[in-house]
Image (tube, rainbow, N blue to C red; front, side, top):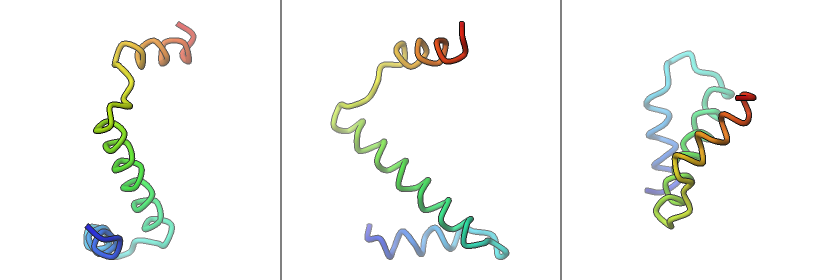
Length: 61
């Protein structure tokens, strides 16, 4: 999907009173999700056990 197609797809899903900040947020979120999925496809994911350990460490548990 081209960048222009993604832009139109995101724009169609926004509420009518969306601000430019809303648009930018949605596009950045979409890009981050796509980047994350691409990393997983390349086998660059983090095992869930490691993620749970990191969260526990951040939470001080």
